[in-house]
Image (cartoon, rainbow, N blue to C red):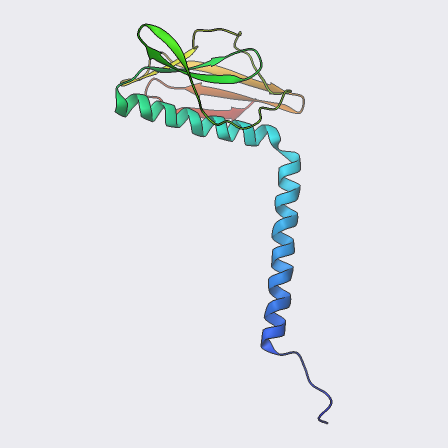
Length: 144
């Protein structure tokens, strides 16, 4: 019969494309809702690696400190620590470090790696994470 016909390949591909797009968006939406702390820590870990690379290849002395409410990167300029603008995004208020607030960095990156190995514990209501920088500037992370 001429009036009956099935779906064309193009129609089926459009339906599959829409279903795939909706699945991707729903997964991204679910993931972003559950992990703002993990996202903030990922951004900080990436920025820390970048600061270590800048110190290593630029011959500068850079550091990481905790100001009491968020982490900050600093650079040594004329025997003083100068705040570096690093885009970390919004820092979750519930995410805290076990370092005391200070103008001096607890972690110092140099052209030779990390000045001394350092440990930092992150705390938030649903969990904790332990960061350890080895002398060669490598960051190791582990849940606690």
